[in-house]
Length: 251
Image (cartoon, rainbow, N blue to C red; front, side, top):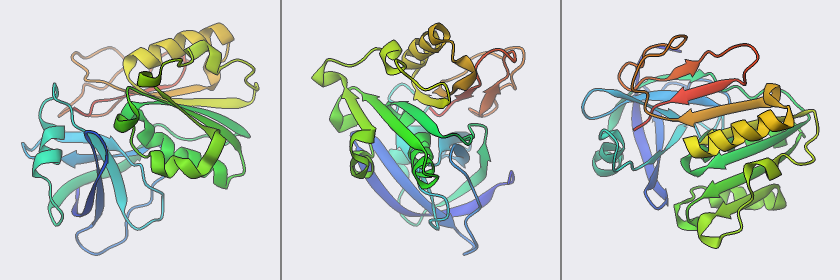
């Protein structure tokens, strides 16, 4: 699905400090489009430009859910969502589209940094439904800034929280120690975390099993990438020997 469609804001919820979740349903009363873990949608914000947000609900639940981190240094899209959006508002939505697909495997290692938890939530649920083994490491500055801890609680010791305020966080390399050679690694978060993981997977020789999504604000067009339009989503097309990567701008 690529054309725009109108959706109604059915609900808003503050999930953590500066993180607001938005629940959307089709304005025409029709079915919610099919989507799979890793998908994102485009939303037209107040100034008429688009922002991209990962779907963080569950496929088939009857609504589309996203979570928006307020970005004080952004271009105004997140501030508009937090300050202006209200239940009953009608939004123009494109997608869902998926360039961060969850591949079938017997086991997974999920690594999230901050708002990067959003695409990994439905991935973890899908892994559990498929009876795959999985573990999630979730990094953040403070517990209060880490959304969806309530949804992760029932998973018990499969989920490890690493708030910086509590100190003693593991380094990227230690997350890969003893990793089964059939385990796929999915990560999403800020550049600093992704760069550390990139170095770690290279050292461990498991780049071919490493899939990432990085939230960023592309400034220039680079060879092999589509030029971002209206803060558009772009997939990094690197060499066949490099790990799959996705870049998304959402400020």
